[in-house]
Amino acid sequence: MPTVEQARSWYAGADPVHDWAHVQRVTTLADRIAAAEGADREIVHAAALLHDVPAPPTPEARARHHLWAADFAADVLVAEGWSAERIAAVQHCIRAHRFRGDEAPATPEARALFDADKLDAIGAIGALRAGGYAARHDNPLAGPISDQFRSTGQLTEAEAHTPQHEFIIKLSRIPARLTTPTGRALAEQRSAFLAGFFDQLERELAGQA
Image (cartoon, rainbow, N blue to C red; front, side, top):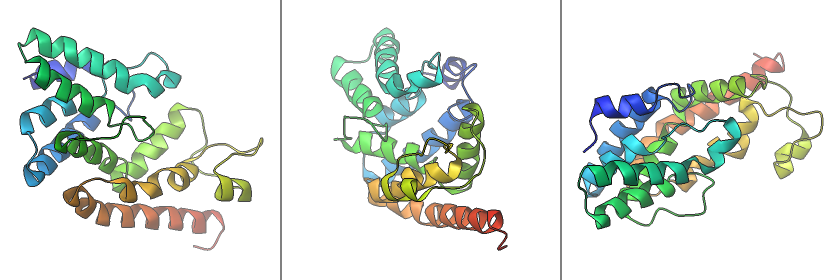
């Protein structure tokens, strides 16, 4: 099993939305979900520690980060003497954890990691991460949302992608995408908080609060 010291070193220089602190939170949640759902906790723990490495060189490269991380995980676990079957199980967890990915989580272990990673995108920490993502991409922290975006999810030419847009297009949809009873239960308070946060933000921006 990779050590905490090893794992921390893999995330040196990672952006603040996908850094070591994110990995620690996801690992804690994944372990909790795995225990409740009867998943193999060793596979889940290894996959959680490895799911976001190595850090992509550009923001655009994040679209393939799950594939890079799965390859990186294989190298690490081969060196540790893991069996091919268990390495493949870890790789599936990592490849299947991306919200917009093509590979669905098909095992209890993959479902535990998927839910844990998504839970870290909602709630209070989700609000902070949405702001950090916007800042990293030089987008405003708040702004108007067009009727076009609300109806189609497509920005107008003059529109920037703010955390409010991310909430509409992705974060508000996370609870419905979760795959385990434990994950869905943990999401209830987090999703309610995040919805309330963005409702309050829009009211403040409109001068209503």
